[in-house]
Length: 330
Image 1 (cartoon, rainbow, N blue to C red):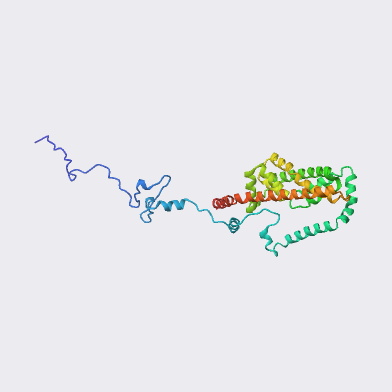
Image 2: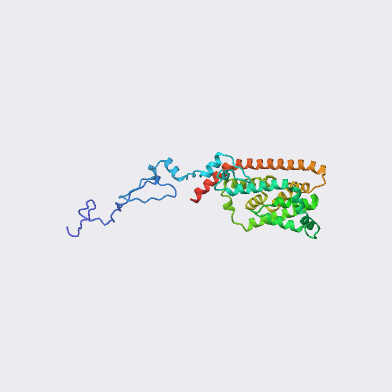
């Protein structure tokens, strides 16, 4: 029949080609990763040649151990400090155990003991020899400035001889004026020492490497004014405590208050100088000397033991923080 055009058949592909785009295929070099195996903030690209396991196949315990950094073990010095008590004193007992390496400590001790013995034995001869200088200082206008300047200079470590100058002040000027001179020289010297180490010294980190002094710094930082006052009354040298206070960034008012209230500690040494220069045989001075010295020694021992008790109380925490700091730095 003319004019009849058969309609195209869509039932068979063989009769008419498909004009649709081919279906996308997945590259062979990629491995599908389930969405549940990807943790937040993690991305993973894997190849078919070297495919890494999914995070689901790794136990949670393993992940926790890898993410948490282990605290380093204590160093030999830290382990030793944890096993025994720490004591802040004039002499390091550990160093004293090696005479060949630390011979100078024994030399200093022998010199001090010999000087004390000679002063006690030849006291009258020494006082007679000092009389011209003592009279000159006492009679010269402005002579009292000289011991003040000397005390300021001796306030800086590692100089020593502070106590000798204090005794001479008591010997020359007596208890009242002598103590006033000592108080002025001590306060000015300690303030100068405090500000020099606070603003111009950069040795605070090196200073805190020693465990004992790092613990003492922590005690000062935690204790405030009363601990500072107790340390000032202890047997720890004044120039050393002032350096520690400066490194701790103690306020000037707290430092000044502790320094002023600890001046009676110097009064004991001034009184010793007064008693050494008393050639009149005054029994009252001799009776007062012994109780004053005993009270000063007892107060120093109590304060010293209390400070060391606080040091050992914070020791474990300080050592633990040092170990954690090494972990962060590494």
